[in-house]
Length: 329
Ligand code: UDP
Image (cartoon, rainbow, N blue to C red; front, side):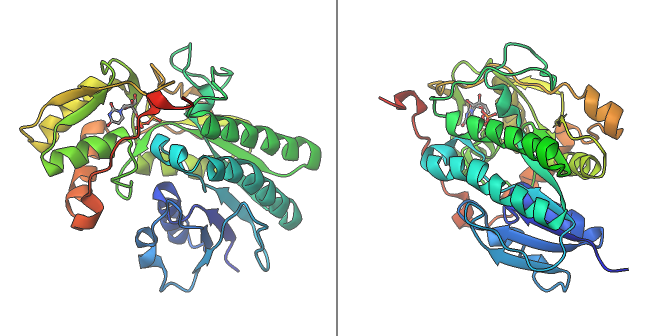
């Protein structure tokens, strides 16, 4: 039987590259697409020799053409860390609006099923904890995170419209904080920031008083959840994340213990609109997909630390944190 063909956008990124691996393992023909603004070909170079893998260097905000049959599309192209979307706000808005419009058009034309990567950022700085899918969120459209949050919210809206109006088969995953190998060490996110600082022998920078919470999911668990959602028959958004919530200060202490660094936690200003709490309600994923995370934070962090330690020195460089508090001033 001919292989099923899947287009993965953002394929050279952290999550996109793990999805490429998974679908290659499941014997799909993978068409990987990326404009390489934040992605890195090193994440997928091991797949280039395979006959069922092809790469297209393309920006999905421009018309997307794929020759021949297409069965599935996974839309994972987007800058995804606060530092990135401050640096490239317009591209962030374009990929979540023009990009998804192109891909939904492609899905309709090819009669392909499309799954889009949404985010816990659609909940903004949430007033309810944990966040169920029914919560509509608390988002500041004109703050530093607005370009990402509103693009992702628009992306969900246009995806549902293509589903109800054009009958396109759509799936929406709301991804909570995820970590693991191939995360960019300089993307400014808390986990690579802390591990990078520990490796370089610098103090760990906690923003604000560190009482804000997050819940971190190991990448293999996330990929399994996405895989199950794609093959489910549920078109509404589903949260995928690990509900094991922790304060950022406690998280910093865990990284100090894990890395054995003699450095300490120091405080920096809290970025504008930084969510105070975040934790997924995963009741839906459990009931609909029979999914829940399996990898504990201590196991996942060990694997991730080993990965970061093995990187070449040019990837371990320090990144200056942009001061979000001066945004719009
Ligand atoms: N954070 C921190 N120190 C850093 C980077 C981030 O204390 O060097 C905090 C940040 O303010 C936020 C949390 O860690 O409260 C998670 O930040 P991240 O950028 O990883 O993602 P977010 O969940 O905010 O999108």
